[in-house]
Amino acid sequence: MWLFDCGEGTQHQFLRSDLRLSQLRRVFITHMHGDHVFGLPGLLASLGLAGSSAAGVDLYGPDPLESYLNGVLRTSSTRIGYPLAVHRVRDAAEQGTLLFEDDDFMVRCTPLTHRVPAYAYRIEQKPLAGRFDIEKARELNIPPGPVYAQLKRGETVTLEDGRSIDGTSLCGEERPGVSVVYCTDTVFCEAAIELARGADLLIHESTFAHGEAEMAFQKQHSTSTMAAQTAAEAGVGQLVLTHLSPRYVPGNPVTPQDLLDEAKAIFPNTLLAKDFLSIDVKPRCNSS
Image 1 (cartoon, rainbow, N blue to C red):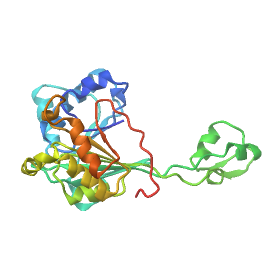
Image 2 (cartoon, one colour):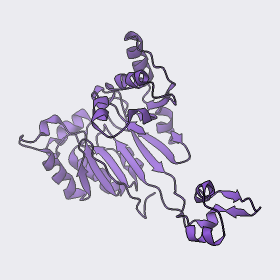
Image 3 (cartoon, rainbow, N blue to C red):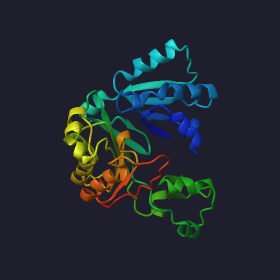
């Protein structure tokens, strides 16, 4: 399980959800403002107390992340009893190189325009193996069992009777993976558009309503319409607005619904983030 940003109260939300904190393996931090990092030391400490993270956790973020964590953990005499690695993202962001890659995913990042160094992340799922043709496997008298899993992955398997079977011959065409971009905090900028180009889902901050554009530029945050414009110019599949200012709570003159309506006027396929929202991300034919 991966986590993007860790504001105060994150672990309490874990307890209210169906997610298991023990499954956490990677945390990506966008920037060092408190609403994005104040929950991290406590969450990491809780993992250690539970003794449920023997595999370790990898952290990715701005340069000060490591010293911040070390300072909090040291002064509070907190011991993390599992492997913890901190990776600085600045070089990968500035050079346009991969930040992370494994068998299933690739992660890229880019610098944003904010009052402190901030980074957006793009997660790309690698192409998925084509659907396994069980009937064809049966016709070839391939015995069911663990060998099917190997063939589904496209591996070449030698059977007990000496036959060598190429798994790709039993699978259909590769299916495209999905791509998700997480973009906060930033004012409207070209870098965000380029990182989000062709993504299936863009999660973008929307701190202010369109009428507060001047304040957004001053504080280097985005309005609802800036987020929508980024989505439109990047050609993404779906936009989710997040990071709304508390001034827009229901009952105030401007509400979250107003921000959603502003964004949808520019980019119709827009949702408003909420606690425990789950989205089934589907690949688009023109995703890159």
